[in-house]
Image: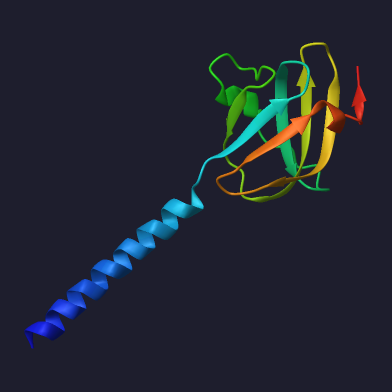
Length: 119
């Protein structure tokens, strides 16, 4: 009888640990790495092709911008494919389409990706 109770308690503990581990895994940090030539001053994301732009992600940074070679914590975004609209310090407004965003990973936007821009 004691073995059965111990196994039941152990099973509940393993289930609880497994559940909390799954929750922790689903909330991994997603980050953006600015590999463009200029400081990004505004950045919005939309599920690919939907034009449903979210909040300005630059507000997640202390100074509200993302310098060249700086990384930025992204919030309110689930893994998937996104269009990214950004503005930079020289006045360009660019859209980069179909960017893959993975849970717990860093996605980059490089200067060569900035092909759809206007001033």
